[in-house]
Length: 530
Image (cartoon, rainbow, N blue to C red; front, side):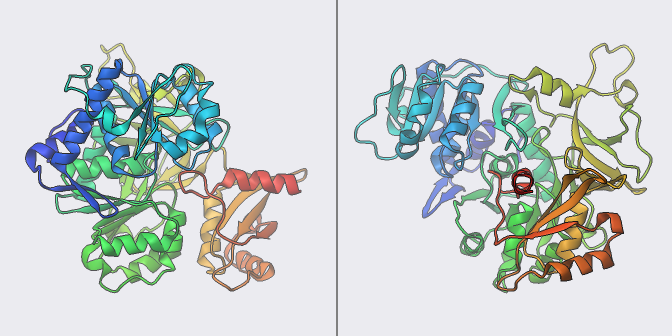
C-alpha cells in the first residue's frame, strides 16, 4: 500500500514500487505501471505546455481506453481538474457540460469531434482539442487549436502547477434525473481517501484484477481505477454491448473483483456462469441502488465462494456504507454500516438524531464529502450544510462549522447500527395518507419471479394524492400476466401498497447514462400517456 495524498500519485507510487506490474488492460493491450506513469507524465507536460492553469478543466469524451485514463491522471499531475464525460451523452449534453464548467481542453476522438463541431462553436472558453487515434489531417476549428494525441506526448518534460490535497481535482456530472446535470466538485483528498477506504474493506491487493464495466464518468466506475492503483492491482477496461460480454471478460481475464449496478446484476444473474468462476472471482459488489434479494440469492448460488459486498453511496460523498459479506445472508436488505474513515448519521428535519428504526435523512461527514456543486450556490447550500454543533467533534472554541452532505435519502438504522435504505425523498410515493418506498414495491415484484425488470412510481390522483404505477418486463419468453401479478401483490403487500396499474413493456427498460433504470423518464412517459 502507499501513503499518497494526490490522485495522480496513486499511479506514480505504484510505478515506483513495481514498474513491471500490469496496470491496465484494454483489449489485447496491457500497460505496465511504468508505462502508464510515463503516459500520465507525458500528458501532464503537454498540458503544461498549453499553459493550463491550476484547477482549469480538461474534459475527456472517450470510451474506455488507456488514453482516457492517462488524460485524467495526467490532468491531475499538471494541476488541472479533469471532467470525465459519459460516452453515451449526446452532443447537446456534452456542449452543456463544456460550457457549464468552462472547459479549456477537450480530449476526444476524431469521430466524436465531428459530432460536436456545432456545439463547440458555443464553447467560448475552449482553447485546445486533443484528438486520439490515427489522425491524418487536423480539423480546423474557429478560436480553437487542434492537436494529435501523440504530439501532446512529445512535449518537453515540465512541471505542472503546485497543488495540495484540498485542491480541486475533478468534476463528475450527475446523470441529471431532474433538470440539468450537476457538477460535483471533488478534491484530491476526496479521491484518495475514497480509494484508501474502499481498498481497505474490499481487501484489495496487488494480485487483484478489477473489471471496469461501469462508466468512468460515474463515481463508482472511476473508483475501479483509483482503488486498483492504490493497491497496485490490474484494471481491465471493458466497453460492452451485452451482459454476456461482461461474463466473458470475467472469465477471460480471470477477474477477481466485479462491481456493477443492480440492473446489470439482474441480467447477469440469469446467465449460465462457468462452474469455476468463483475460484478466481473473489468478490462481487453492487452500487447505485439496492440489489433485489432474489437476485442476490441467485448469485450466491452460482458463486458460492465469491464474497458479496452490498454498497451504498452518492456522488457527493463517493461511498457511505457497505454490508460485510458475512451479513449478506443475515440481513440482505441492509446497506450495512459506514465505510472506513466516514461517519453516517440519521437525522430528523430539526437536526436531532433519529431513534432506532425511525426513518430520517442520511447525513455523511468526513474527508469523502465533496467540495460542492460547480457554479450552483443554491443547490450547494441545500445539500452541503453545516453539521449541527452537538453532532460535530469540534470543541467550543472552534469557530468554523463542519460541512456535511445531506443526502436527500430516507433511511433507518436498527438497534445494532445497520442502515436500511427506504427511498429518495423526491421519489417517495404519497398515497392514501401513507409514504411508500418504490424500492420496497419493486422488491416484492422481483420476489414473485414473474417479472424480468420493474420500476414503481406515483401518478397524480385526485382522491388518493397518488396511485402506484409499475412498469414491468417479461422473464425471457414468458409473458407477464398482470392480473396474476396483482394477485401476488395483494397476497404479499398491505392494500395501500398494491399497484393501481401494471404496464408491461418489452425489455430492457431505459437506462440513464450510469446504467440505472431511468425512473424519471418512465414516469414522465406514463404521465404523457394518461
